Image (cartoon, rainbow, N blue to C red; front, side, top):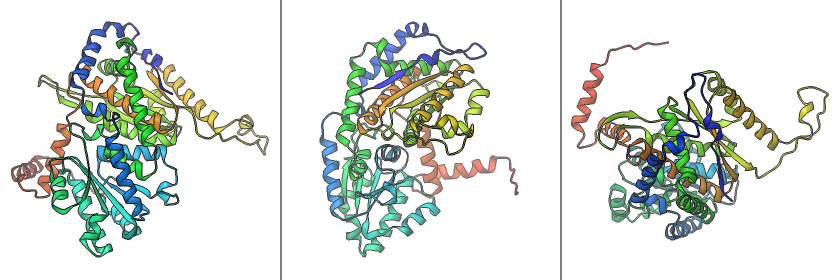
Length: 461
């Protein structure tokens, strides 16, 4: 029960001669060893979330209390790292009908937006008497999450008849010691779970940020953490030249440096589509940086793209095969699907059907993936294959741990800090200023001035 990584296709040379060769790996061994050593020295808190059972057990207890309320809907209020992990797990592991409200467990809806049309329609169709909300914000200062909380709290107060009744229908996942939501919990008595110290949002899926929703949905969180632990152990024990996460990071950084800045995560499985979304944030927010560790301006970082096969063969692959040779591909493959759907014999003698009789959708999915891989390799587009034996909690835990470690190593190879996000913080502060938040008056004035400096080109059509 392991992830399998095949890097062979990355040694494909582009039509103009750019690319990497197997010889580049030993040539960059000192650089790779330094990156691995730095990560081992840092030992970030997220890397040990699989160890121990404290957080999983706390989430299981809280989930049991929530189920006793008789709710049929569980809302996740958050954005970015506070929402993408839960959505990825649910899509991959929960029954496909869970958000239809047709299962034994409450449906879990991840509301990661402040779109008034969307949120308004969701709340119009839900019953406050049968709803519980989990608001997730480590800092307590994320403006979107604060707005979601105020909206849903008011909706519950009106629907249940009192603020006390609404309070019982909330679980707050936030910093254990500081921040606006921690102060709210202490002052108002909201039930809470911690975001462990030192765990940033995009690295938090295996903490209470992701585990509570998983417990409410009835997912196997024990196997999830066991899978992460297995992968982490194997990576630590491997020699540098056999460390899969290190080699994944090194090859992708080398390709970035040689003119392949677009990194496509091509998930061949509809239920894995949000795993690719989770990857997209992890890779982009960790590796896109203005400054390196020495404070020099570098403006570096790959652009991650999410694709889902075979759907996006009909929307993106034309560009990938014949467009600019600036992309590297990771095919996310399932070794075995949970079901086998056999195709019946054709009812009409037609070349459109003849070759499908007696075959299966399982065979077709893999043929589609291999066909796309072949077309890209023939066009000189580098690719690799990351294979999960099956789509279950254990292997999803492996996937999360592998990519988190690989991302951190890629950042160290690039000479940047993979754990900060100053660009995101700049946007957050601008939004606070525009909403009239105290302490941001000068920034609000600067934004107004900046608008006035721009050349005007406004059209109607």
